Length: 362
Ligand SMILES: [Zn+2]
Ligand SMILES: [Zn+2]
Image 1 (cartoon, rainbow, N blue to C red):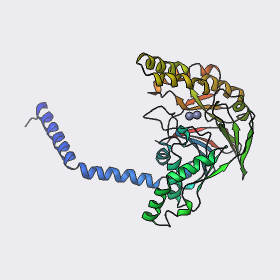
Image 2 (image 1 turned 60 degrees about the horizontal axis):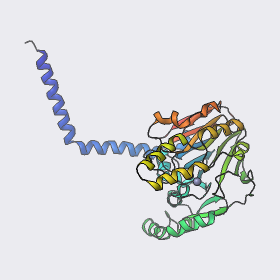
Image 3 (image 1 turned 90 degrees about the vertical axis):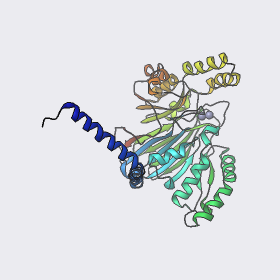
Image 4 (image 1 turned 180 degrees about the vertical axis):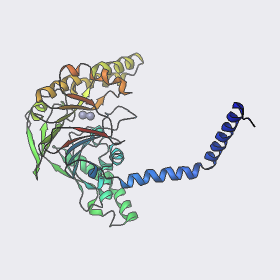
């Protein structure tokens, strides 16, 4: 018997319909199977074991206070060997640490650049995850310039009830009450424009805090991490700052904030046209205490860094297509590599080597 094309097509269609019906009927089982594999993968993950020995800088939040569906508030993780540090805790960034596979229970300390809400919003969540994630018996040290004690005390007070719930529910072995919250560590730093202070210098790791220019917000600082011949520098929030050029000398990576006025002006114009006076005023006010991508590129050039990575993007960038407009003329001010960071990116600097490896964890 000869089988016609139409018969084959009908049989294929019937098979497809039967498969779809079976899929529909077994949705629950298939869903459980898929979820199980995802959980299995997550549980087997060991980010630190996957990274080469050296210095690493990861982006747990690359956004700013403006709403952005793809970027959490400012947050950077620095990993030196197997020591893990967090710089700033922007809104939603602690969840990103989990997605990136950062072992939150093993975070050694947090560092704050200044006390604007977008940099501290998730500090309570960060302290909670560190505590319970590692069953830690001592609070998370939180380093910062003058004022850090007020911020940490405030979050400790806000989480005082939650702390009791966690211990009562999970037990003292999992949530030892003495380990909850944070312990402020104020670092004294001079008022001069380019003043700096050593925060930590041990076992080949040096962490330096230095002043930046976020006037009228004072204090405002950046951080430099030096480890095994490699260095990363984090600007925090700043306008154009000669202090960053000085303290980033010879670093491999400078993570710098950036505000593109050509894009902010679009928001300002639309806000005015639509009677949104508060947004119009705020988008005027923020122009003078952030750096443009071009200014950041100039700083990177003066410092002679290898790679300039932008974070704390203002305004939010709706897609990668807008990156060129965001960077403006930055490339004409700096010969090295430039990246617009996205949440989940990690840059690795193998010890005593010259290369930079990039990966994205989600
Ligand atoms: Zn900010
Ligand atoms: Zn700020």
